Image (tube, rainbow, N blue to C red; front, side, top):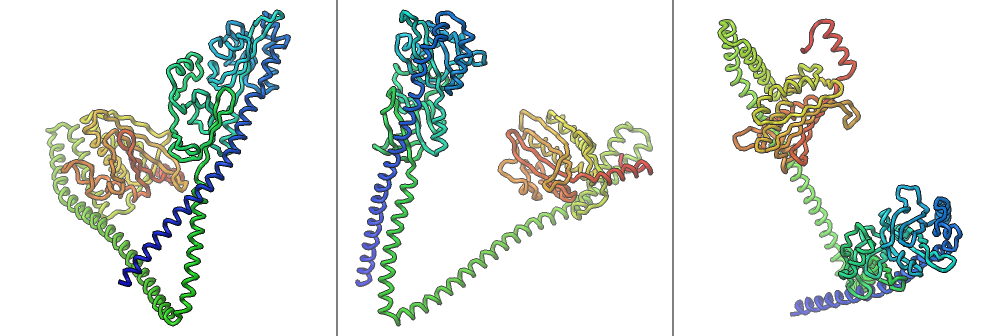
Length: 596
């Protein structure tokens, strides 16, 4: 009963502590949120002042220009070229995008950008609201995407009047407000400026520009289309949601949100502040409180410990022994895990060694079993040649295939006992010719379209020509087999030279097919003996294992990767040294020996 009461009391204390910490965290969050809101209010006020100042900075300039004698003279039919130069000088000095003069019908007759690829001269902007407002005698203001340049801007216009007070033209300036975006972005702020219809005009995040804070009515969309205000923009809805007065979710992130509508044209400015600092500080306060509470508990325990000194010493001794036992147990567990990892590596190595041993035995068996039939076939071919009753070309072809079969059986013995023997300079282009000739019937049967790209210079490596051809033949046949069920059967063979990972010279060739690819298998898995992606009975899975073994014997590497259509196998081999290659060529010329 006493134990149960103790457990109940402990549970109640834990629940009370949790509730206290939750309330403390919420209280801290409210406090720090209020602080962040206060800071955000200051930033919002600053950015509002900046926007208003930017909109009003040049509001007087169109009015001043309407009084310019050159502008009035040109509006009455005077020299436009002289005014173009004058407006260009004004624009450069004032730092505005463009200044231009329009006739009463809206056609631009003079502009600061005259003579450029995006000149306003000759363009009619009578459809724009700021032009119509100036023609009605007032100042026009408008924000939109430029119909000529495709760049957004803020347009301010004023009417040009003659001596009788009649409107004879419209002078307008275009301002680039994107510097505001850059300032927001450089300051790491999240700010957007929207017009009275809820269309985002400027934003620190470019993805927010020309999005909608609310749905547009049919009338508003019609007015935007008529004014060509946002030509080319899809005006999709912004991914945001107002959750409370000062909280919103934008782009999936909960943020502090403040806005002001105290801007010209009914525009609104929205400021978003991250809640990360609020959460961090709230957790910090909670952690400090938890630490303080823990300190109080520790102090209580220390005093309690003084009262039970003798029992504490025994407890400390037992605790020390238990700690040591835990440390020994932890070390023992770690040693056992390390042993298990070593055992797993050993098992994998034994499994691979078993496969290679089985492959060696199979190689010896195939070599032994094929030796006698090949010898008998050679004898029959020789007898047929002596008798002269058979087609000589057929005999020559059969003889060549027999020699190649005999050479391949010798290579099986090399696979069982690999080693660097019979190495000589090998031209990869010539070796590829031989390999392609050997798989020509397979290419014809599968109707493969072959693309061959030779190297710009001879690619000469040091190795066994027959074994290199065997690698090429295996890879070519694998590529053809992979395209058996495909409609589009294309085979690309490319050779070249380059530098290896350590800067050494290498020769390489790539074989690319449009087959089924490697799938989820890795090259290491496919290189294992008896592993194949072909259907059961269609292959033993030795081709890549043999090819990888040959490439490693030659000091090279083989790689494979999936591509959009099929797979690419790449083989890299060290190039023969130039002096060694030259010496070999010299020896061949002098003694008449060498490979044809």
